[in-house]
Amino acid sequence: MIIIIDGLNRDRFGDVLDVMFQLRARVFGGRLGWDVTIRNGREFDKFDLLDPAYVIGLDKAGHVVSCVRALQTTGPHMLADVFSDILDGEPPMRSATLWESTRFCVDTERLAPDGNMKAVSQATCELMIGSLEFARRSGIEDIVTVIDPVINRVLRRSDNAPYAYVGSAKPMGKVTAMAALLDCTQERIDRVRAFAGIGHDLLLPDDAARALVDLRKAAEYADLPDRVGGVMRKPTQEDVAQYCRELIGAAADPQELEAVYRLMEALAGSGVLAQSALVARDRGARLPN
Image (cartoon, rainbow, N blue to C red; front, side, top):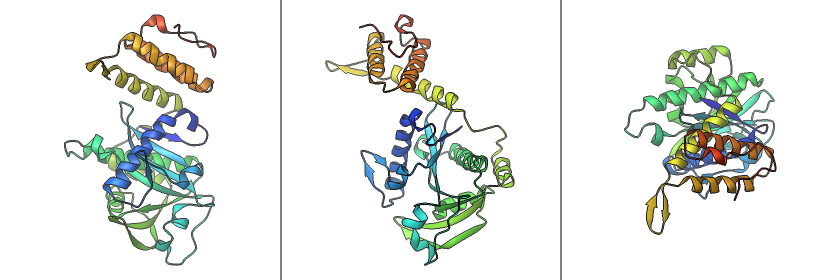
């Protein structure tokens, strides 16, 4: 399942983006050894400040399992300002219908803890399809993507081979970086879908994605033990009610408050929160002390 997060819905999915930045830190800073900035376990750079779109893969439980960033090429972008050596002195390509795709990664630790790569392959194809469909629906005609030889082979094996390359490959960290061009045609999307055997719609509406993530968080909270007086125990319903009080008190706007209400309903539905603790959906509503 795929969710698109951009300037229009970013305020609703800050928690999802936070997990995504943690995944990027583990992959690019840890596994690949790229020269990236990591603070507090999160990889974030100046291009994340330029209102990019993020294509993020979720598993059935609502965990972030893959991600990629899409950024316009009409302004600053990585190929022009970070990986310019790849261009061999040529000017960067710029067009309103050409977007840059970077930070493509998949959570292999979650998807393949036993070494079975089937789920990784499926998540990779879903992310490719989601990226292409987002681009096509947004009027983007081509993607330029900075990749390494491993991802290049993955693209080729998935019947998603680049139609051209820009400049030449250059070393970066433990791997080599190269720039490839992909057209965002329905034909390309259909090829990847056929390869992966994916016929259903992958793009989740915002409300469905938010509910899925909230349910996952509710389930995790229900299973989270707490240390009180040196003794591990599960949280009581009063602990959960207090947690919800804190969330309600910290809500900065009606959208955040609505997200808390959805979480409370999920908790109540699973029996973790008493039904009597639910409150009316009112901006001034507060759980009783």
